[in-house]
Amino acid sequence: MTITEIYSKFNACTSVCTDTRKLKPDCIYFALKGDNFDGNKFVSTALDGGAKYCVIDDVNAIVNDQCILVEDVLTTLQALATLHREHINIPIIALTGSNGKTTTKELINVVLSTTYKVKATIGNLNNHIGVPLTLLSFTKDLDYGIVEMGANHQKEIEFLCNIAKPDYGLITNFGKAHLEGFGSVQGVIKGKAELYDFIKQNDKTAFINTEDYEQIKQIDNYTNVITFGSNSKNDCTVSFNDANPFVTLTYKDKKIESQLIGSYNFGNIAVAIAIGQYFKVPTKQIKTSIENYQPKNNRSEIIKKGTTQIILDAYNANPTSMLAALKNLKQLNTTSKLLFLGDMFELGAEAEKEHQVIVDFIELNFENNIFLIGKNFQKTTTSSKIKKFKKFEDIKPDFETLQLENATVLIKGSRGMALERILNLF
Image 1: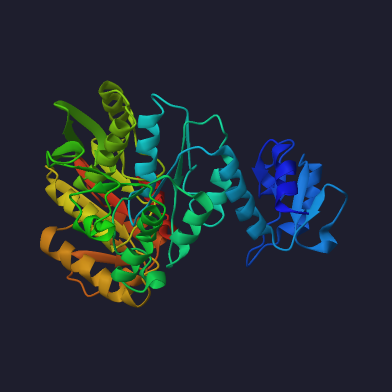
Image 2: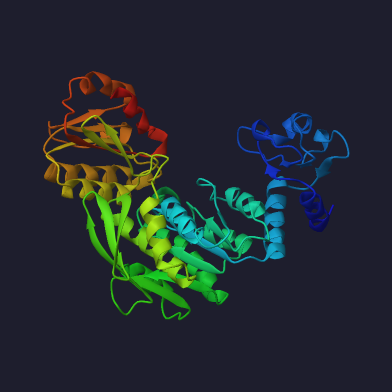
């Protein structure tokens, strides 16, 4: 069956599904395979659960004529997404970066949604499976689609761009994330900048943060850009005011008081403002949408427990974001500060060095109540004021002795550490 014929079947369905536990009536089920699962084994379950068609790549999985046999389910899903993107032909805004992708995506979404019909990547479905699923959820009646792109190796962003074919692109930043796959910070820069390469090769539009030298360097002399930052010469001028604890900015003589912490969120907010301005969203609606946006899903959430203020930033961590969070905590005007930090993953050969860099910064800038959790932090050289625990369960006895009145607590670590569990100890 050709991809065009499969597309006809897709259009007769209500949605796309890859998990039989989340089936919707009359969906099209793609039997994806992984190291520890094979979706072909669940075809009967999918059909019994309401799937209208099942795309499979195992001839033995054929149950009836509702099964569509292809050479490879994943490549079919990706080709279908590209075909769909071409058919609906709506403007696509793509973004990537080392930190802040999801927060930035959500900020852009809330700003544009005040004026237009917009749909964005759900959660962080931003890889070679998530991007096709996002595109297939878009409809031609949308004014804009927002696609988040993640990567941990070079050529991944290039691959995703060739599927999504974005009209607009932005990179939040370049940092020390996924060093194991990219090999080095320069590898990260090269990999993320593949989005700019696509933009330049196809004469599309890039949004450039002029406060970030690396962005200017990577976009080079390309002229189809919209610039933003504090300099009045930018296409969109946004000034950073303060971040104690929440980021405040000035845009068109209006003060915008966000509910996001840390100066590192300035660029994320500023690009959402720049995109709103470019697409002619009224200033009042830009201001209101940003001020009403609240972070969630363990991303820089502010949580109150009695007189204690908790900064829950446990969705993910890398050396760049960890250091930024610590610098932000240091600047906060609060007397009692507690740190619960978990290991940073996917650093490869740089893991030992990067964890020690974090420890050295802590030693110089914080006095006590410092708790490090995980095998990587366990290997670091520290003074006696820092307490290290190999696994999460080991911290409970020490936690029970803490004085948490009028304290500010930072909880940060990679997703696999699941440090949000600390909330249950309060």
